Length: 318
Ligand code: PYC
Image 1: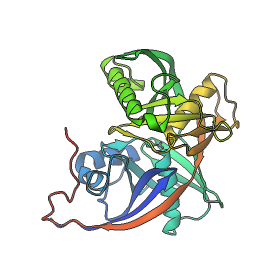
Image 2: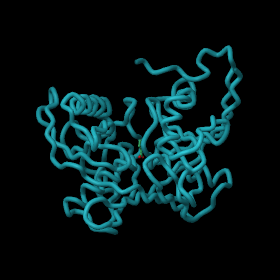
Image 3: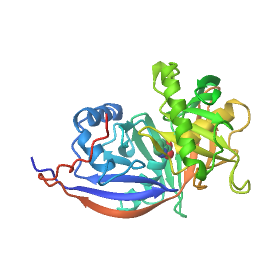
Image 4: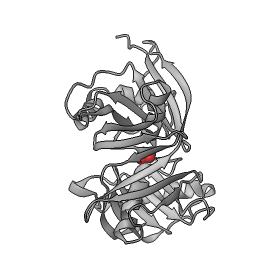
């Protein structure tokens, strides 16, 4: 069967790429965004692989497909995915999506509701080009969970939901610096393996598929902290990871270290910064609001030649 070309817009958010499929994607049917995400995973995985895997993609690539929202008043629905599978939520990707929608003339500055598999997020495109995203309610599930990590002893971290499940580690393992990238990858992959082995999960047995390590900022005038985030698919986030920042904000608030409206500046491993604050609900979850910048840097048409064995990407090894 001949596949129609995909129309693609590329951007990056503080260093982390987002590749939005703006046309040519299969119809994901009706229902909730979670149901559409499941349909994408089960019936159309070629789309994810064609967009994120080599030869067109690479490990850091996050793809996004725009679809009809299930919730009213949303400008669109979106499903994010990477080299491994679909993602629950992605804030850097939402920031990339917003500048992409503005680039193609679908939105202008102002506030826009966007439907995702984990709920509606509210994005504001500002005049200066920055994008603020009010995320889904986020919370800490457990503080100071001890995990035995070979070669590192007991590592303690918090389990928190910020649209994805995170294990957040403060000042343990390799120093959070770009030159320690390999060591940080090794450390966080080991932690992730041990979480799985030791049965440490999010709510309802959900896999904790992001591990986030915090250290001091490079420049305290620019950020409060620097992080390193391991994402599913053995990739690290080049940006400060918006869902990870959301999880951090929820933990800071739970510890009484961040009041509603107070600003937390989170640098990522490249020292680019997301600015965050929480809006308080009553006791329990908070609404994290994360602001960052993205730049459109490419427009493409992806062609599917039936004789090309890798037209749908090179599958990841099992
Ligand atoms: O910004 O939320 C984020 C994110 C998740 C995975 C990669 N980036």
